Length: 144
Image 1 (cartoon, rainbow, N blue to C red):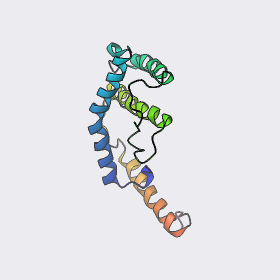
Image 2: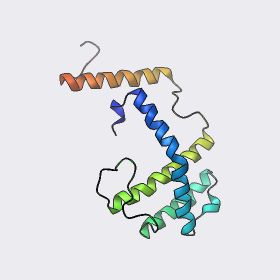
Image 3: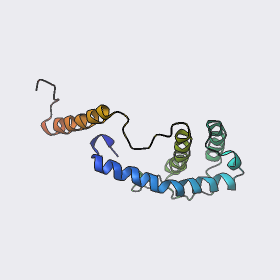
Image 4: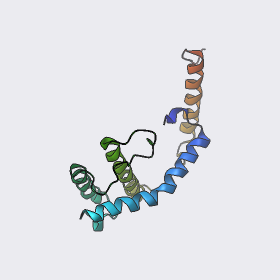
């Protein structure tokens, strides 16, 4: 997905989709951690827990991702033929949701809200400029 060309409305839809899948992905990750004797009891969304979960993840991948279906793919690649790297990416995708929980614990600002309205306006301006450049085949400058 090329976020540079995503409209703000579609960006919000994507964010909402990611938010909605989080509980399911975290439950799935916890199941894999528990089934393999991983550090489930230490997963408290602390920065320290990241060391334990990363160590588990490396061992889990080295063991061939036991319990993960052979056709598992990350949500961003549903159209690709299943393969081992995509299967590992699907597990990593679940791990990303856990990392987001840790980050949210230390930085509780609401997700999806720009802290800097000028930066948000700049992103919109850049998206418009890139789209215009793609149509005309040339770069726009402040003098063009």
